[in-house]
Length: 140
Image (cartoon, rainbow, N blue to C red; front, top):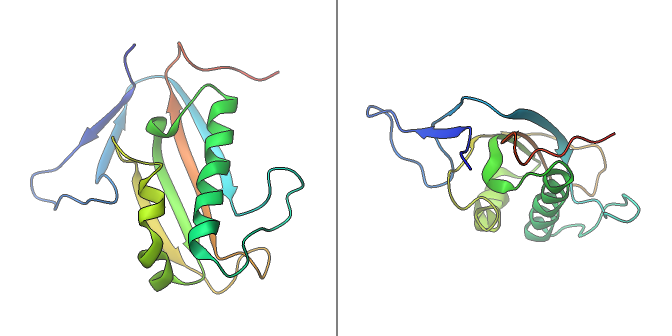
């Protein structure tokens, strides 16, 4: 099974441990995942108020649920955009994100914001993935 995702490391840009500089895609199904926050998978209520690490973990778990629903996994993600109300705290706990995105890292952006949709939310991550055709599970 071939992956439509290829990591490109330009020789004149530094290697980053947290993300890839360039990702190309040659085929597969493009999937857009809405901004995931630390909301319960049961009733969508915010969970882990005041705990950035736990909120980041919940965001990543929710992204995983979305990916599995269409036959994907974390390795299929080509781009993430992270919004946080505390950039410094995010950097202190970003090793939590690394547990989910371990190889073939997606491109990534981190944006500091004043507030998210609920006052208890500290981090939100949206993602784009490309699922290989043979694994993609269309939903009806």
